[in-house]
Length: 286
Image (cartoon, rainbow, N blue to C red; front, side, top):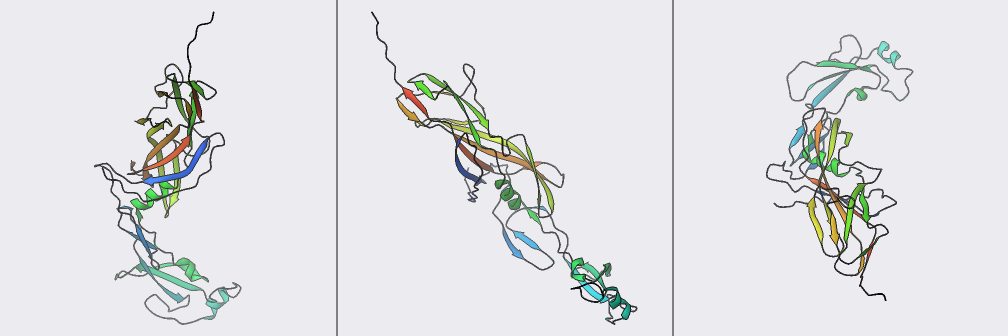
């Protein structure tokens, strides 16, 4: 399975009790049944707002609209007429920085022959000319997921005191910092005018024991002696700093719709306290 790295790094707050790396890495490597993403590119338009290219559209924006204005005077319509009148001027006379004339604003879908619809009347007619809501793409959603302030992974070890003996099993238990989003929680945001929810989930952990060995991918939180299933016996003396890598993913939904997979992962790393491993020898005491 090929990896495509978009290179999104975020500096997050760190837990005071943990030695943490300060990066979150977005990886949109996908399984065969995942959602593919080729990235996105944006260009600015006028009332059309933003458009995105190169990524599947999750939620389409509204149609582009065109507008016409006319003084709010008898005989003026969207089809023609720009006569001024005292009544229109009097209605805006006390509105500083306004156009100075009460103005009607009409709209219709761009490049169409539909009838003009009255949007409203205002001394500030440009405020009635709203840009269309842009398309929301999968790349937009993935990028927002990568900006999530995730909880920091960390944990504890046994024996306590960060000391152990050669060939004595050390038990590891993972945990999350109090701040940030962790698996099982939902993050809700407004993205390009859409309500987007992220349901955070754990893809896997990797426990790196600091001596060249690791657990491999696992979803286990580990645990304490004697039942914890993440354990490691060091074969040489020394000081080792185990590292816990948490790979997070999510399902998302837009405007309360159906949940669907995000199609990628975000990685967060944290360190256990260093463990010092000593040797032990037997001797007879007379």
